[in-house]
Image (cartoon, rainbow, N blue to C red):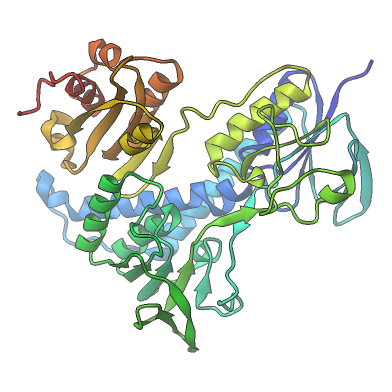
Amino acid sequence: MGKMKVVVIGSGPGGYVASIRAAQLGADVILIEKDKVGGTCLNRGCIPTKSLLRSVEALLMVRKAGDFGIAVKEAKPDFPKIMGRKQRIIGQLQKSIHQLLKANRIEFIIGNATLLDPHRTSVQTNQRTEDIVADRIIIATGSEPVLPEIFDFGHPAVLTSNEVLELTEVPKTLLILGAGVIGVEFATVFSALGTQVTMVEMMEQILPTEDKLIANQMQYILEEQGINIFTGTRMEGITNYGSNSITARLDNGEELTAEKILVSIGRQPNSKGLGLEKVGVTVGAKGNILVNERMESSVKGIYAIGDVIGGILLAHVASAEGIVAAENAMGADSRMDYSAVPSCIYTMPEIASVGLTADKAQEIGKRVKVGRFPFGAGSKAVILGEEDGFVNIIVDQETDQVLGAQIMGPHATELISEVALAIRWGITAEQIGATIHPHPTLAESIMEAAHSAHGRAIHLSK
């Protein structure tokens, strides 16, 4: 019998990881991508937004240089250079992925893929159309922004998260519809660059999926930066498209005018045009491909991963699903475990969470205790001049196992992995507290929060 042949459709963090894992297991892999390697994450999502946020972080740090005894005359953003840096980073990481594909002998094809049957995929490139026969198929086509019908997306004032990353000038005013992760991150960027930002969120709090305490504190911080926020408010429609402005009407009767509007109310699975109906792949009401815990669709031998399955729309989840799908495509019996998925928001301060909040734990019948430690009570945060925020650890009263955590503060997105590890492998708060953490570090705050759950945090005043 010859080599197992695997076709992967989509080269984002799910698709290219699945390709590499399948190749590691001995498969002959063909990776098909309709646009650019790296998918949304690398080209229009995670990476470019974090590049902009890093530039803004540097700007704000220079503006605070006097607090550290450094004299700086003036710090001004150079937006074209900021955007140029973003493009260089994207290009560098694209090259890195291409090198990985080459090292693993993966054939990479730019083209549009359509399923003909469970073993045949038609690929249309600029030169020709060809049919590829494979033993297994992994679909990793990602998602795209939701486009509400009330907006004219052909108008230059109307932006999605794609177009906002291609701006050549900083808008003087920006209206953001949606105060979820994407909206809040872009609000952070443009406010620091001098834009007057207004946010409109239909839910009762910003960051609707986060703990209420964190959402409230972040709203306070954003408002302190001069960002206007409307929560519990709907945008009913656009009353005027100007040559360099747009006016929106809210359900409270107010009208807001801005130079640009960013529509960031969510994403939808990118599953159209794949021929799923023809081969019998079952999809959900929103176009999401339905899969089991092995990432296999309703058709044997066809797997789906990442945003296209409509689950947790995070790059690192797509990568984990890609590994599971590739291993099962190669004959293993791997299962996805979503019990400890970290969620990260790259604002200033950063926000990260994993597992259950106290409220969610109580809803499912858990009796919990909460360990909390403010960063301002720790040495490293004071040294850094970043004292806002805290660590919350949610602990099961009966077993002492860690059920969840919420971190708001410096480098929260790095720190959360320690708690994710604890949840995944059943580590207790006692065990975290008993583990020696280096001093002075931000990670000590996790140790102190674990001690706090038992009422014995050393550096916390009662």
